Image 1 (cartoon, each protein chain N blue to C red):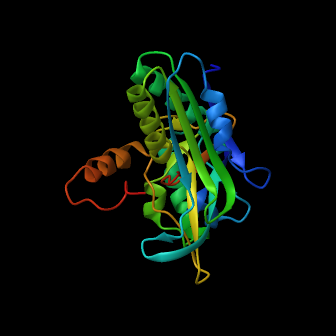
Image 2 (cartoon, rainbow over the protein chains, first blue to last red):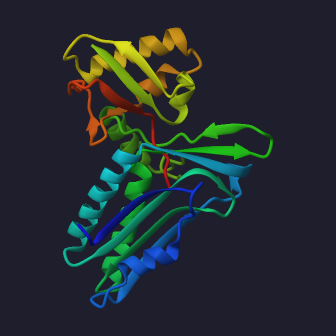
Image 3 (tube, rainbow over the protein chains, first blue to last red):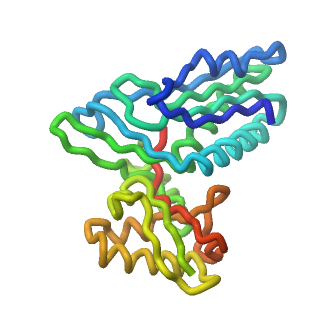
Length: 169
Length: 86
């Protein structure tokens, strides 16, 4: 489907490029474009972060990005162009980690499609984040289980009042 | 049959090659493979918690393979610890 662009970008070769996302989704049919850009930030849970390594299972990630695009199209219920790209490899503070752009006729559908896509990428795609800290330590983020039994329990727990872990990432 | 399980994220620490190979019964389920991987990790990579294997999913290049599914005949699967993209 040419209206959905998906990519895993090894940043050893090239950085993510938000301008490419805007170029892809731009279309005379569409008056609304919503974008989400995720960048590497300097602090997490009170620790000073110096960089992040992203590990991906590329073929399945691309398949799931495409599925997410189809779901966004169903959510919108009309014409949509969607761009989903995620970085792979070693990133420094400020580097682009993920770029989403959604274009539709009007703003409401664009915002909804963009939000659906980034939330699904974070919670469903086979991507793993390892943070590197200023003290030389490194840690893999806890993340969301894709295993069906655990997934249901964790999603239910995340919806409880006072829940502070799991889906805050 | 021999199965090659490709490792990702925190599970890469289980083997520096990025995969483990195990013998499992022909046509076995993912649930059986999960038990075999837990046993393998217990003996060969004790720094990996069993809970991490329990919370991990298995997958082919095309889809998540839940516990009731059979291990693909080509003997290649990936084990996916909890995900943290974005």
